[in-house]
Image (cartoon, rainbow, N blue to C red; front, side):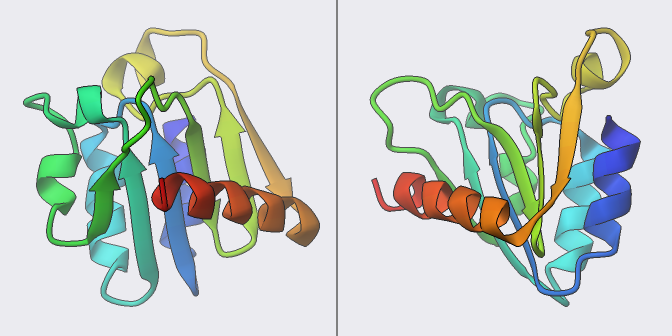
Length: 126
């Protein structure tokens, strides 16, 4: 899963948005930081996971990222890259990449990405 997400992020031309429950993948964190020089980056981290030692939140604090304000778990695992939506069970973590039986769907459909952008804005503005 990680390589597929990486490949799409590395080709981003306009935006990289994400909502993640747990995000500790240095490979994905590094490419997002790198791409932030060229595209709009916005991210939402689950508050209980953002404060962990290995969270990519620590690396991205200077970007346009926030910790969710949801009173419950924000359990999303979504990347929106330009008009492409990547979602599934995959947490961008080393376990998610190498130990767990994870899945992703990659959806190339503007009306679908528009719906996910609505959800992103909703969670962002809580």
